[in-house]
Length: 164
Image (cartoon, rainbow, N blue to C red; front, side):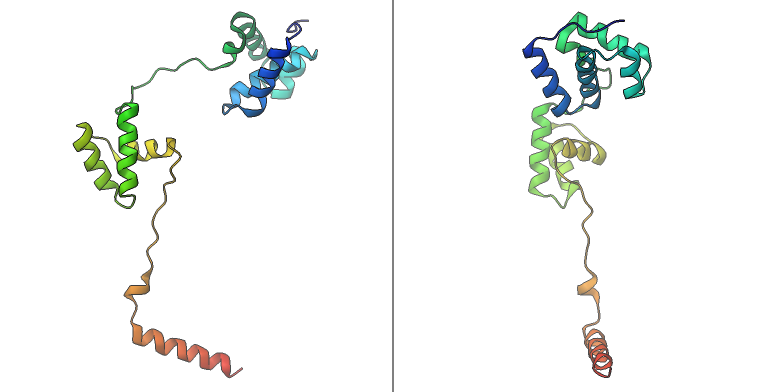
């Protein structure tokens, strides 16, 4: 039987905080795995709780023993570097906030200020990461209706309601 040894109060508090408040599901699961092991749950029981393989639980234990709290976090992943730096992305968000109904203007302004061309989807992703909501603007057909026919129809409906 393999268990995580007794945890210090500091580790318990930090693991509990990670388990209850961290954004990443993986980090929350790993923190809870360590807490369960400290409560003498077996590897098999923990694997059954989270519906993962035993090897996954063992790997979490190994990362904890090797790196401590830092071992619970995901390692950086490779990928394409971002087109805009953090400062440039902040400028793009500010430009988008100036004209929120015109993405094309924000894209053109971003290209002028940064010298880098980005797509609409890139700007939307940057806006989403900045907790901005992206919604389609619904336009009312109110201005396109025939006012005389609309008034006549309202009167007919009122007359029908009154005849009941």
